[in-house]
Structure formats: C-alpha cells, structure tokens
Length: 306
Image (cartoon, rainbow, N blue to C red; front, top):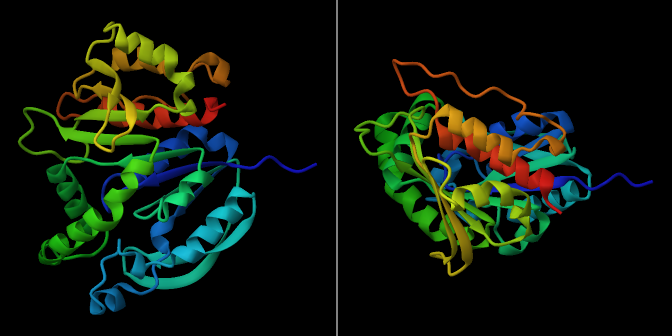
C-alpha cells in the first residue's frame, strides 16, 4: 500500500521578512506529525564572494539553480528523498549536499519559492510575507549584523541592490500565494525590536484553504472580538478576491486564547494548541498577538484543508 503524499507548505518573501520564524512556529505546532523544513535559498549557484563578483543579488534567479529546486520539490511532493544543496548563510560558502527525506509535512521557504509560478501547484498552502519596509529593513539589518557576520556598512552598501532585486523577482510571486501577511509598525513604537508587537494584516485569498477558519472569521466579522476586524470579499492589490483580516498589536492574551480555541478546535486532535503562549513581562513587550496567531492559523489551514 502506498504511503500518503506529504502536505506541502510554501513560504515566500524577501530576505529578512520572517520566513524562518514562521517555519519554526508551524513546525513546533505540527512536529508530532513529522516536519521536513527545507530552505530554498540554499539553491545558490555561487558562494557569496563569487556572487558579489558577478554583481548578482541573492534573489536573482540567475544566482539560483531553479531547475534543480523544482525537481527536488516534485520529488518531496511524491514522498521521496533528495540530496539538497547546502549554502552556509553565516559564511556564504557552498557546502556538501545533505540528504532530506519527506515526512508528513514539507515546509519549503525561500525568496523564490514560487518561481516559476507553476510551482504553486505543488503546495497545499502558500504564504507570502510582506512587512512594512522600515520594519523589514530593521529585521534584515539586525539579522545580517548579528547572525551572518556582515559589517553594518556592508549591509547598507548592499541594501539598494537587494531591494531592486526583491522588487523585480520576489514581489511578483505575491499574486500566486494563498495568504499574504503584512506586519505594520504599531503606533507609539519609536523603535521596533524584533520582539515588539506589530499590527498584522492578512489577505486570505478565497479558496478551499480557509473553510476550517469559518467559525473564527464569523466571530471577527460580528465584531465580537476586541482588536480584530474583517473586510469580506475585497479586491486586493493583486486583483484577487480576498478577505482581509486585521489583528491589532495590543490584543491581549485572554482574547488571543479565545481565538485559538476557535482556530484550533478540539476535533483537530488537540484540546488546546500544543504550546504555551509567551509570558508577558511588564518591563518589555514580550507577547506578540500577530506572531502568536499566525503559525496557528497556518497550521490549522493545513490540518483542516479538504
């Protein structure tokens, strides 16, 4: 008897938009089912030094082996094992390939996840991450200088070229995604560290993916949920019919817990979402409703998809 094909989640966005954070969040919730995360930004053709010498940004398709990436995604969709390239994002060096086997859920995340757009057909759900520009630049600067070994001057020197490549190659994938997530800087934050709360806007393209969210969305539409708002059946910036959900940065934990019970009902096999909400700390903003609810929403869509 053939094993069932794995579910596939595709996450796309520019460098530093939160792809890895979302991947880790979904994996934490659904890990008991077996999760295979695969970073598609590893399909770089060149080392960082070679890429810079050629004048190529990381998001440029010419800098990536997209044919191999597509072949590997198709193999994982069929439940197979691949020899995935490894690009060391801290040092910018290409390393030996590693074996990656499909499990119950494959999470593929990268800047070119939906390039070409036909790759969208491989996924059960696709998410495009699109934070405010100032917030995105801050997140990327913090990551590149603290985790990836770039000097601040290097990050600033590459910023314009990276942004041009993102507008040309990454942004065009937005229209092919099922879910578009925008983080906005909350009013009153002069500084916005990664752990601070942001207002979140989610475009839910009207597809079968969202049938399981009906009880949650109905409650929001009735305006019975403080700090949340829903616009039904808008035409979004990509010309697609969507529902638009807003989650305020200051939604409290009690409301968030109430919503989790609707998003993640007991019939999913768990009476409560399988991890605790972040604890609040009066000295800092530790609880982030958007970042808490987003992986739960995505996990629920995958589990409840027809």
